[in-house]
Length: 562
Ligand SMILES: Cc1ncc(COP(=O)(O)O)c(C=O)c1O
Image (tube, rainbow, N blue to C red; front, side, top):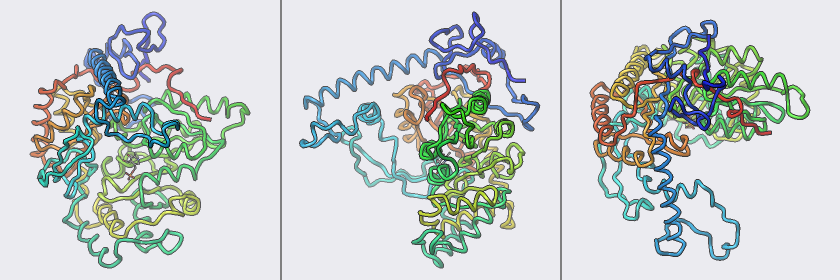
């Protein structure tokens, strides 16, 4: 049974924040339903067992709403920054304040400006204030600890100078090194070094020409058997795997149904394909089903012809939210409406499931039910590149039709070896139990870290099994302050704000690794606790709301591009 979507007292319809704020909590313009609020207040834990028990395991995923006061203060913070931004732009215009940013050349001064948009204003006046938190150069392997080159800015972050010092042994809470294979010692490094001596680094050709090595063929067989599919193809870049393969699969006259929080590579691929794109609310099956129903009932706009193909695009773990796709429900819907499913496992492959085979393994599903299994080697395998797995006919088709297969140089052999060695380790084909232990260690670290952060009073997003752990900061001033304070304490963290998140939902995003020891996690937690008190970040009222309990307004989620 689905939870009651709830709504306004007076009309029992889903409501938006503007029209009803009785419950007092807002997230992305929505207020919580009274039913959800009551359930949360009663401290209920929601397990998703609806849809005829599609889930074989408890699915604990909750998102605590942004407290009203925090939301208001965050908007006020952005308002003040914007006002100061306009004031400083005015001063720059009259050359009272030194102007560091690029300006149009004199001979082009009458042209329509190339870069005048809000994001440019934001970059100049807001991002510049905290720019030191990004692009920090590291000078070691991105393992559980990392060395960071110290920088200083003497012009308010417009430029940086290296001091020559290295900040040593920073606890790395930001790299996607989920299983700890990003290492410069051990079996992967040794195997890759051996292949480097034999094959060199570059391939200098595409797969179709003279760049098809025995190593590539071996890798693809291994990936197919790891995923439990008929065939697989490997690509030199994860981003291009999405952006170049989606256009090979769908085109004009086809319909893409895309989760609103899909990665930029999926969005770009969808746009390049020329298909019509409709966006459903994040991980919201009611929203997806509504779009599927409409697609079947109404067909294409104007002509009303049936869509040539319907392709659903989802991710395994969403890298900004830490949520896990409701795959059993998505599969049920795709079967019901005869749509195809494209699953991006960039963050979930290796990191989820009892045998590390991703979200399909996590839910105990059949890989055959996913039409296109996409993933990357950049995270759990500590390498680079991407793959697509599926039926042999699909892979044969992509070999000749995908731009990244036909026109891009193939993977570097030492990189291939790193992937092969780490994958074999996960599969236990190296004769050890190391891979299994890493998977278990990661799962343990995830639960421990999430539990401790929640008990400290932070608002933490996502699924309790997700190694991506967003800690909500909200206010713009706290983005920079959190990153800097943590680095002072020798903890490297990633902070994220607009445009990567909605404007008021800035956050720190931790990525856990099997390489983190309990001692490292405890050190990081102690420092996070301290910084949380210092910056007043403990916003939680311990009222987490499962996604399905959120009311959704049918008129606000759909976005169509014809
Ligand atoms: C969901 C998703 N897909 C694709 C990519 C692109 O992969 P890569 O960084 O390996 O190019 C990323 C990168 O983080 C991602 O998060």
